Image (cartoon, rainbow, N blue to C red):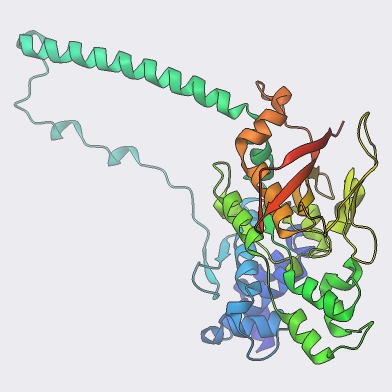
Length: 427
């Protein structure tokens, strides 16, 4: 069977695809494509479903519930986009095409479409014009006066439409030059995927149980789940159960929904990815929108080196925001007191380059759910961003990267409108 498969041009196409630059750095996508293609080509495509792929490709435990874990769906979306990129770029001359239709995981192989042109003889021949229609201009009858009136009315309406269109285009042009439009059009791009990453609330619960924070080195790839250890008496079985859950906060989900509804969002290039399923290459290849603190999303540690306002949320130390380069009138650190009777909080917004510099990332952080909520509302409220960054409006230049430190107030678990404490623009 292996020999016949190796001789199959469809399998040879799949081998060329996974050896291409776009797939070499994505072992999971390559494994996904190889698995579903092989199963289909050997006649076992009927067994392909979300659970079997999760177990075979993503090492999920037998019988896991895909409703609680969308890793197969999210990677299927990425695979569809990556295949489109392959056939648009290095695979443009392939005579075969493979795709994964939506609603299915079985690949479809088909010949590449050839360029179609409309033949000249496909146009109607001259003799098809009715013979009784005279083409002699001298035989045309004079237009009735009612026709002239209709033409004048049409000209007036057309003039009004042109004027209205000009006003609309002028208004639209001014909107395209606003800081908020520049921000979101740099986060969402047709040539790059955008990942929205809510925080991992299960991680926070697990940390409370084991008594120590979980570092990025342990979190990446799920190593922390393979060797759980406790600094205090705990039930390791319960810890592993909690670590296997995929909880996030309502405020993060509300933020994700708001972000996907901004006019600049590109649905086909946007994906919500759980923090646990993120990989380092995603921070290098994609645009990202991250929500939550480092305690709930260790990936924040990978970008903290670029930040001026750094959130220190280790509960064993002083909770604070470090201001690495304070300007005149600013503090070098801002302390957060979780027991403050006035419920004052701190939150940050950071618009930075991704790790390779070929894209952008937007991170909102707070010491509490209300703090993160306040930062999320500030950055999705176009008026707040436009007012603060108005010096960058009125031209087509790109919006520079920036950071904002906010003071928040929590009322009955909800955030009030935040106040800007400081903000920096990267040179």
